Length: 251
Ligand SMILES: O=C(CO)COP(=O)(O)O
Image (cartoon, rainbow, N blue to C red; front, side, top):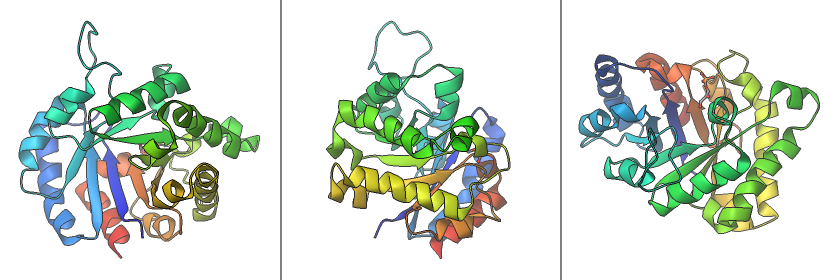
């Protein structure tokens, strides 16, 4: 049985005050949902604060990106080793906003995936198709290519120590969620594709759904056999909404 993992991606949002209110507000719901792992991916500037606030809580946290380098002359970047020192468990990699807005290629994503694991963090590999690709029936081919790029560099065994997040780009921040049936079909395809390399890895890896998951639709999505949790943007910024998703995952 794969454990449910509910992960917030705060993106570029928050203040010191809102971060404190959010983390404090999540402590009780996280403690109550002992069978669910809950994590938040904060802007790096807040990670020290999150580290202090989460002390003694089961709430985990991570970054939204990481550089491929450990240290050196790379102005503006954040090293996976530094993220580890600040207590991160996870690092998102290949989020569609990084791929699109920062021109991160499959090769860059694969290199970051390896660097994140080398620092003993768990990469959360984000994959998913655009609306154009969805409408052209290319979803399966797109996610296969995104997975293959990482498998080629990191090896299939490395996927066992990672999390995959299927985030259809057309569902991110749009209020348009993939139906549970559509999402389940893609998740099952991802697992079947991985099983072609290694059945144990395919059975073990958690595959999260992301894209306008909210308090109202979470239960139906999380009830699907191959949906092991959620990567949540907008709804992770509100204690009540994120709590409802955590509770749906705990059932
Ligand atoms: O991109 C996402 C999480 O990484 C999803 O964002 P929304 O939940 O705001 O659609």
